[in-house]
Length: 422
Image 1 (cartoon, rainbow, N blue to C red):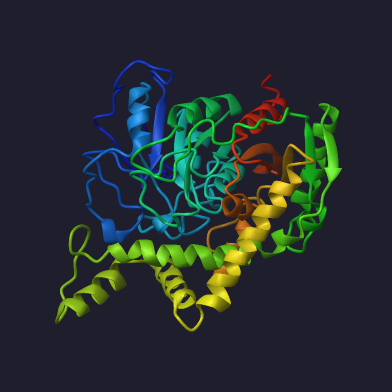
Image 2: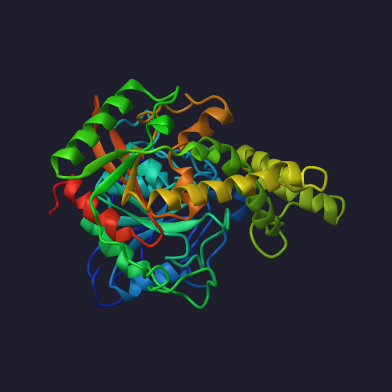
């Protein structure tokens, strides 16, 4: 396999099929934050350089049981903090449609590998859009399942209340096939849910809500707005009802996310001290060891978010920042759940612009704004899918559908309709 994109950090020489099943003979790549026994897993970071997984993540075990051929681990933003792969310690991944532009992130390698035809499908993790955003920028399908629908056992954690593993594929049908393999309750992850957790089923009424007050903001490119209106028109031509809805609390989603996520990340990443695994740097004493190991092992963006997370959890600021962010999370969740009483799906663009050039987003805030349409689904725990919806020149664009908790079936139905797979 020739990888000119730096989509892979490692191609497994021992790749093989482990059995017969629904994925027999299908080549799959896994993001570098998922454990595959006997293989390296670095989460795109120097601090885990050389770390070898001692066991299989649950999703890896399920892929193997289904007959998939796991061919390698893909590049990612360090510890999944980023939207471009630019924070990876192992170089950027190039977008297959334009090598001077980003494939998105943090699961940029997984998206690029599928888009370039290097593999049939792949797995990514999505904390605030890290599957859907690169799927849109690479012109493929990316699914973030309902929180708890897929086990996180064996996933190197970023934000434990937000992280979810999901598939990339070229079609909705293929993404659904991978999802059906990896989903399910897992005794190794107490946050996983049973199949009947959201068993109260409302019949799919083919009604789509459009939150125009949220979509029509400054900073959204004209080509994205035009493509979005074309997507609405296509759904209407397919017999879907379009309803304008108001979701005012979504205006606070990005701010709340960038308080909750760093807080959880600062806690999760406290375990990386160079004592039991990963790199170790000697200092004058044990405290100095800790400072040097983490100072040299973590990249700039990771250090920034750890500092921010520690700050918002500190005793003098907890209520003012973290407490308020949790209130916003509750309001966003309640508002979306209320909306799903009237509509089956909520439609937005996936990203505010097409793929951008490396180095173009010079400030962290510019990069954070890439997540404006994707973070609400993570905050509320809802399933969401990005569908390829056209091009701006040679650059792909995507639309996002969000469904009520446990209603991945609605996403698959609408996605297949939109992409003419039925």
